[in-house]
Length: 233
Image (cartoon, rainbow, N blue to C red; front, side):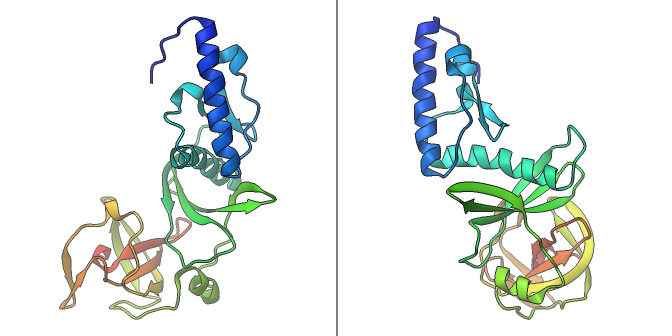
């Protein structure tokens, strides 16, 4: 968004009000902002958390808590993912994917951050000592107890753990091994990438909302969670 600079007094007043609004919302969300130099930079002041750049004041729209949280989450999830692999300078995230898991858990949410290298990094969001913390999740695809805690009891589908399959996701194909099947009827994460309607697999018709889902390890980090309809081979 382009900001038209007015006289410094008016801009400082606007910046101060924006800082107060954002700070109040972040306190409710258990997020502590670094000091914001609105006196010097006005609406071009950077908002930071733990010295991580979030956005300029002028980039924040109406101070709705959901909007502010998502803006902070995007930056802190990405930072945690890059830090976890000691990424080269300049590497960025391409996608932020919340994972639908069984609740309650010891953390607020689990996301998979897909980097430009296509590596998929699981990051959890936790509140610790009154502050939101973003850190790698120690996922182990061979731990059936962990899989059950995250996704519920295993279910049976047309495919079975150990089966090698090719899946289609976001117009790309991946080959991997099924490690777990999720009970049908759970919501689909990243629904915008799933095709709609009915699909026939081995003579059985499934609606997307009730079709079996599978956890497929493709060797690129956190496994892919796919509908049966996304298995192409």
